[in-house]
Image (cartoon, rainbow, N blue to C red; front, side):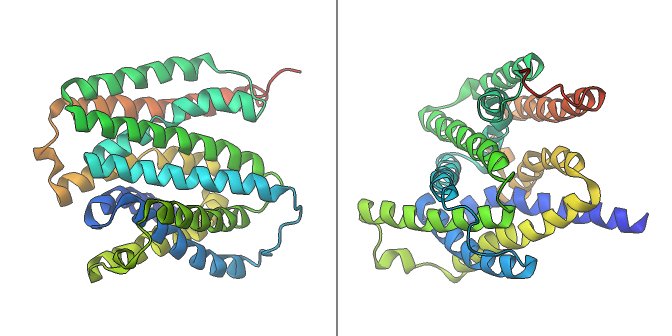
Amino acid sequence: MFEKFKYHILMHVIIFVWGFTGILGKLIHLSPEVIVWYRIIIAAIGLIFVLKYLKVPFKLARKEDLWKLIVVGVIVSLHWITFYKSIALSTASLGILCLSTTTLHVTWLEPLVMNRKFSWIEFLLGLVVIYGIYYVSGNFNAQQYEALAYGLCSALFAALFSVFNAKLAATIPSPQISFYEMLVGVVFLTVVLFAMGDLNASVFNMRWEDFAWLLFLGLVCTSIAFIAIIDVVKRLGAFTVSLSINLEPVYTILLAIVILNENEILGNKFYIGSLIIILVVISNAIIKYILKSRNPNHFLKES
């Protein structure tokens, strides 16, 4: 009993840490591109130790998987860049709330990529999410609408790499997937920063606080959290973990209120809309589990 309780606590600590990643977009005084560049460099180094710890080989079993990992690695980088762009232009709460719409995109992506049957229930829940976004954005100014656009793009990229990674994980160990995607991200963002003319001495000119937060973001929020969540999934099951991860926006919004005083910027309308979206996301996970437990083939496309 205590052993299982211990892993429940660890799971929520990890989700809480992930909820903190949005706050770091405001605490680190660097451009979104530079933040992500440092994050993936630090994460890639950390994942070298993850692979060694889990005794996973560095070499891919199939060379043809490399180009797939390159594509998804670029998508992961774009996801993080647009996520932090959204936060830079507005608030951490808005950035993480937009990310909650990832489920909506998965609804139409999974039937295409994973060969699963289209779910009208998920589609209808997605429409409620759209209403929640519409309700939240009622009084936005031009910059907040730009932040909303970046946030929704970030959610689309998150859905893409989630679905593609689920397919890749059938033949490639998950730690290996993450390591190669981080390496691709390093190369991709280095080229982007060079093309933008931002790969100069200013990239290394930062406060000690920024460097400390970047280490926390790359190691704790990415590499260490990755090892821990694998162990938690083994102990508690994939459904328990996936359902609990939907609490990430709640943790981020609460942290934003306490640390960034975003409640002074965002009104009641934002929090009502947020509640609608979060409840829909959690309801979707519960409904999906109930349907799947009744009929294991419910999500498989009929041949």
